[in-house]
Length: 466
Image (cartoon, rainbow, N blue to C red; front, side):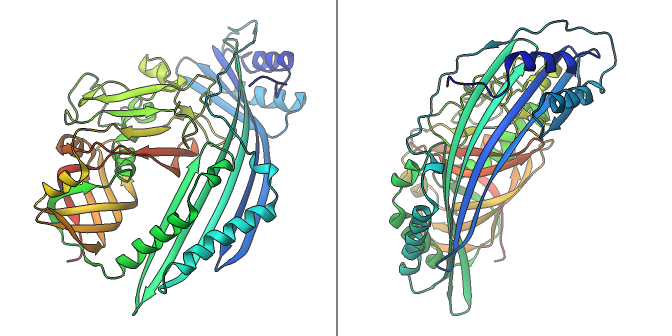
């Protein structure tokens, strides 16, 4: 990752001094250049093409536990100095920083890119989407509409601060989306599939589009015959990969310093405590090669790393950014993220997952006399202070006498993050990850990846209409 810096070093040092002139004890600049493109096809025709460029910088200052921030899309010296002055206004005191000497960091690039998305003509991308769409229409007579998308982003970032750090990174992301609507006898169902990686268009070459379309359609058609889901407290088996959505929301956000530093997390002041089943080890890792939520450095210029959050049920750590780390008296964990230069960074998840256990997936189902198999979770909400959550299960199946039987519709999972962590009583030996989603929080929307092996929660309240 060596080459010409986005902002000239001497100019950057002057901007940081300007930002800190009213008494800040820390100043930082984050500059960004983003190129993006997106193609969509609906009803078998290309119906959308967009591309663009985003360019700007955000300037942040700290004084003890206070933060000031300003941003601009003018990267001239005058524009940057104006933003620096605006950020510094938030702080009033004697000047503490008298010099800045930036030293460029050597960044290891763990994520190799083979085909730059912007090097491939739109015609080739459109032909690929048309093929993907055709696979969907041909998969079953019940298909009424197929929509497919392909999007790419190339983000170049530049970070410098008054401690002397100067770091740059280049992030290339590619995403594919497929959704299908099926109808039969007045019944309708919509299913979806997504894949996203920190890769170029080689991601598409490595994807079996036919298999993805066929399986997504098959699942949708199967759900046309679904019964209403029964309600009550019962065991729930979470499918491989899919359970990651639930744990990301119900537990992961409560382990971010964004909530912990404000005493707004159910896991505050509980380091070293048993908060989960001994079968549970939960990790957030921003270093995984080419995973959707990975980066070489976070948005404060700190190298990403593997953070063990829960180990054999014991709470081991939080995800900490630089500012909240001041409040918590903890070092940053390489977890600061933001959507763009318009947002102040804060602690966020990258790739969050539960490690595999010793049970075979088929044995987990066989050991469940009566319960629900959750095959796909669409989304939900969580209160980080209490851990209470509510999730919609878009595809569920009844488990009877240790066998997966009928498809179910209308299932909801209602519970508490702390409770489900303690109630996990079987963990599969088939860990998996799913990328392509976005997570929204105070610092905007960022790419995240999550996963679990197949696992069983001994009891969850299931909401249903039956």
